[in-house]
Amino acid sequence: MSNPYAEIFRAPGAKGFSAAAFIARLPVAMAPIGIITMLSQTYGEYWLAGAISATFALTNAFVSPQLSRLVDRFGQAAVVAPAALVSVAAFLVLITAVNQSWPVWTLFASALAAATMPSISAMVRARWSEMFRDRPEMNTAFAFESAADELIYIAGASLSVGLSVSLFPEAGMLASTAFLTFGTAAFLLQRSTEPKVRALDSDAPRGSAIRLRPVQIVTLALVFVGAIFATAEVTSVAITKELGQPGAASFVIGVYAVGSFVLGLVLGAINPKMPLQRQMLIAVSVLALATLPLLIAGSSVALLAAAIFLSGVAISPTFITAFGLIERRVPESMLTEGVTWVMTGIGIGMALGSFVSGWVVDNYGAQNGFWVSVAAAAATVLTVALGQRSLSGMQTEVAAGRQAQPAE
Image 1 (cartoon, rainbow, N blue to C red):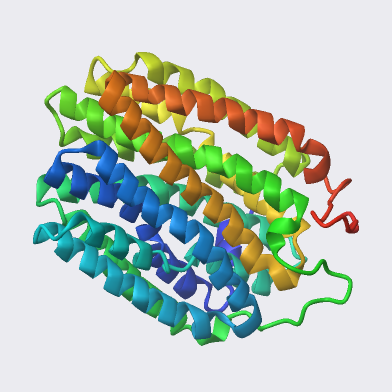
Image 2 (image 1 turned 180 degrees about the vertical axis):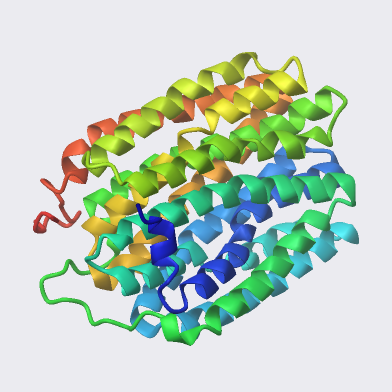
């Protein structure tokens, strides 16, 4: 039996752009938690750290889809390069402002400007779509990228926290900014695999991809998944600090990825035949059940790590099915924007999760932060369950009222 992952990487340029994209999108995970760790160590207040991280993430959630919409019209290199340069410069200002104790307003201003960071996850999926559109290799490629995204979110966060705790507060953000700079440059230099710019089909819905009902449902669901991520990160940092072992936060957050990453790769290889919307409902239901042990996991680092490991098992399958649904329900000429909205949902969730869990930790204690994870997981299940008909393609509507044709 042939290895499906080996098959997709035989395509010319696939290894290069995928490797560069992995490095370029590490800041998606490193920056939000890096800001929190940097500021909480420097200022000693989780609410301020969460507010500035939320400012960056929420602004990026608004800006990133607009950038991707421009990418669909003008191409990746023309839009991503200047946007990334602005983001890198703003991150450097933010790091300097913290190090030099500049006024708090400069922290918020630089976080706002840094939000021009483009969605590399959307760009790399657009390249896979260009290679394997309407071919079975597409499912494997999307499964690989979903597993890679999940690994990036957890491993990137672990790396960011580990650097800041073990070296100096700004270390995680410096590494994140370096990855953004060199990874994006390496990705954009590979012009042979850049997708062609396509005119909007005459029968495709007009306006933004967020007007498509499946995009709305999947994006909202991943808002809650993003909140689960951020809550696990913020609460783990707070609990390990309370236990007198702050350096263990990096390890605890890192184990989040292991089980989910492996399970995601297995699912991509076997390519289950069950409809994707049902697969997603099963995945988020398992995710919800797996958050419950977190409520009693604050007595030791070992118990916390075990509960975090269990709670992460279903995240990669959730990603795989979410992006698979977007690829099937969004027109080709809007694909980059559609994927970006989903990534935006994760970013919004991480921002809100960071802020809410930080507030809960400050006011009710570190262990109670995990109640935010439980609530967010329940909301994810409800969203996906109520959206089954639309996600199946039987009722794909544009918000303005136009009826779109069901996807195959």
